[in-house]
Amino acid sequence: ELWREEVTKMGAEEFPDIELHHLYVDAAMMEVVRDPRQFDVVVTENTFGDIMSDCAAVIAGSLGMLPSASLGAPNKEGRRHAFYEPIHGCAPDIAGKGIANPLATMLSFAMAMRYSFERPDDAALLESAIANTLAAGIRTTDIAGDVASSVSTIEMGDAVLAELDRLGGT
Image 1 (cartoon, rainbow, N blue to C red):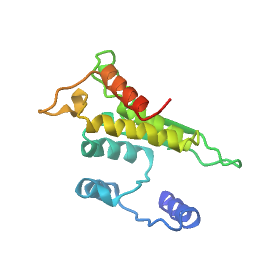
Image 2 (cartoon, rainbow, N blue to C red):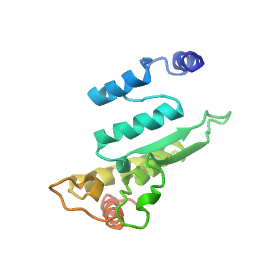
Image 3 (cartoon, rainbow, N blue to C red):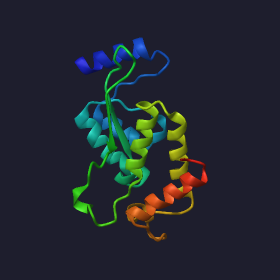
């Protein structure tokens, strides 16, 4: 009940132009699977958020595609503490095998550039480089599917960096 009250209060005071709906976690997950485009943002506590984000990874194709951010409240200067990471965490079971998808880590860095370092143009450039790399058909094993050949972790990173250079990134 406290969570619902605080989120409702914050929504009304700080985000009055954003439509707010409260859902139970099972209904929310059903709606995410049924029609993910209806959500711009999902706000939840940690346990439910972790479960929901892992389940929603199927929409993106893999846990290796999803960044995450834990953002603290802004201080008096408008700055906030934040932590960015791929939703899969460090994935120790595949460490050193060259099969990890580095895109969630790169997208987490793009979020940091946007929300912590106030560099939205650099974030957008990195996101474009990733999108263009994927559009070119380059895939790691987790998202290659049956029809595509796959590249290693390093090869995917190199492909994104090459595209970033092509786009004019430094």
